[in-house]
Length: 232
Image 1 (cartoon, rainbow, N blue to C red):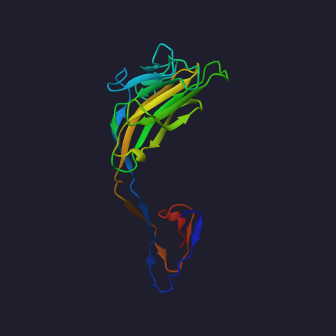
Image 2: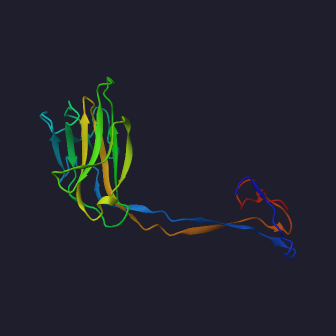
Image 3: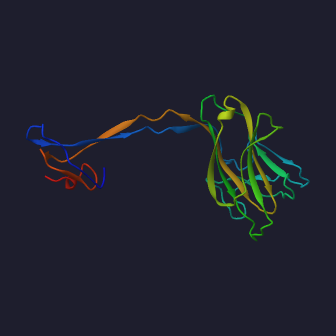
């Protein structure tokens, strides 16, 4: 308690010195246990991952694992996946980077976590655009369900977590998809699928005041166990 005064009724107590104790209760924290992880640290598209393009006549498949992309470094480690070579000229021209098949835990509250980057074109033309989609399917050939998308430029790496409860117990593919017109170096790093694990043990501590005599006033201007916060 801070910045408050407390007057205790000690009328039924015998004369003497007393201490106040305040118990602080800490709830245990729930953490996540990964059961699929990929940080692209092998320096190449990982085994089991695939790339494809949709409605595109461009000659490349766009997604590459790189140590940097036009000055944009990985979120962590030495490598990340970047969408950097293809160009989209229409809204349905898409480039996919697809995970291996992942079986989502039967436990509640599994999440997909990943870091993403979406720079704008260096010339900043308003007609240059970019969108990142995250899609999911039980077949590598689709149909794909959209989990999330953004067209907001992200110049620094950011983390995003998406719930996967709708797919628990199912085997799925997750696709990171770009549709971009001259906007280079959209990035994905640190892809994790994880489930919550039991909270760490709850705990508590007791902070004791210095001794106070019967009938005196306790004035708090800080922590309970600091002598100067008590009057006698």
